[in-house]
Image (tube, rainbow, N blue to C red; front, side, top):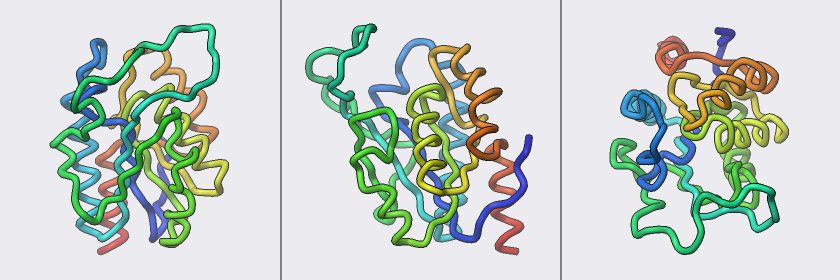
Length: 188
């Protein structure tokens, strides 16, 4: 793990932990992932640091070779955040229509207006929503930290590839607990 520090004004971004996604078959250890993400959210809130909760309501309209997993309208409640995240009025809610949380959502401007210089990212899916959000954050000039034990993917090979090859090029990686420990040391 290469986690070294957290900036004084760091935001947490939790990607796609919503009712329609956490129930997908193949998400291993999702209960543990959710627990770690919720612990991170609580730690950030205790320190009055921004918490961004992201849900996805659809997909980009472009053509692809692979058919979309979902066609037609989403079931009722599909985009609802899971209750374990304990959404608070101070949280920033972002609804996205692409893989990454920064595309056409205003998230970059919102975070920069709050003086945020670093983001910690967790959620699902590691190789799509989490990775796309991390890439966009890095390209927008944020320092990026990835809570690798607070993310999952239905494709284990995509999860492993992102953690081993992509994330070290975008920022630092560490466990949720290591991130919480750094938060605690910063406010001590």
